[in-house]
Image (cartoon, one colour):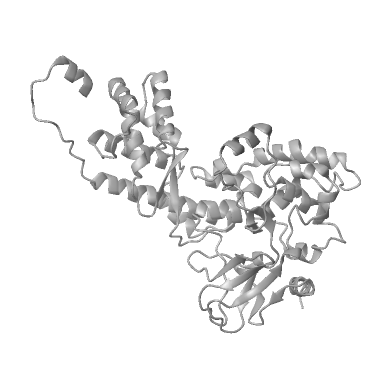
Length: 442
């Protein structure tokens, strides 16, 4: 038995010893040759609705279950994922940690862009990934939030071990392996002002409290493959159950979807891509749209247009185009407003009404320019990328698949726009109007 298999068996035994029930119809399988690590396979035919495994809440790892909660009072004050990151940093290399068999099967090396060298990162130029990696923000989070706590508690942490590198490892594990536990919620600490607002609005539900970010041993052993999802995690009050959502044949891998994600998000979060991904998309960022439509315009007028569009919910950080290759109506409306004259925009403000999403000649021309400028961000052509893909490996191959997917969507969308007929604007028949009427119609 290899070390890989021994660690898998020790983890399996740990689960059973601590109250998990696991179907005898499943087993671990080594998928490292496919760059998929450890996965779960059906050893017998499985029927839709069968419980693959059931996990007691006592084996979940969160800021509520780690013993660190009783030792670091600042834990509950930390934002976002940082409480769980600190708990994992504390537990991950502790020989006596309850979760040691679990940590032993988790990876310590990652293929996400967060860990890429500069030469590999250059391959992502032009994609939607680069601005979302957020390494500097992560570094700042460690230095500003966690490092002071680590230094304050030398009895719990070793500054040489519990460092920025381990912070990124634990953060990446959470990014790739964690679940949102729908049954667990942290009590929100409200300011006096927030408590007063809540009293004034009793109907206000805590919709933003969706659950608690949690590591779920075993559930995270299932891999993802777009379009092949055949299992789902169900949250019960006393346990979490993974159930088959369709019949699974003996020998088939069991997949739990990570969501309907484009390749850019799969690569950024999990370090892999799907060569055939029906959920691929490309983003047209708001600043690009504004720059194309407002070139040469008065700065104050431009800002008023942006504010108007944002208040009306039409302009956002980006516009998404997927594999249907259609221009979002919100983009068409935004182009209309951004290209409007001062008088036209004044009328929109007075009416507090957005124009209809008609593809007029001017709007069509601006959208074509936006798409072409978005395509110009890539340093290589689609043809060059497709040629390089035949020889590429590892990070470069993944980057090329992302680039190719985005470029194809832009090109197909551009082709669709070019052949879409211009909307004919209906104009009223000529008639005599007084000056006051003319002013109102402008």
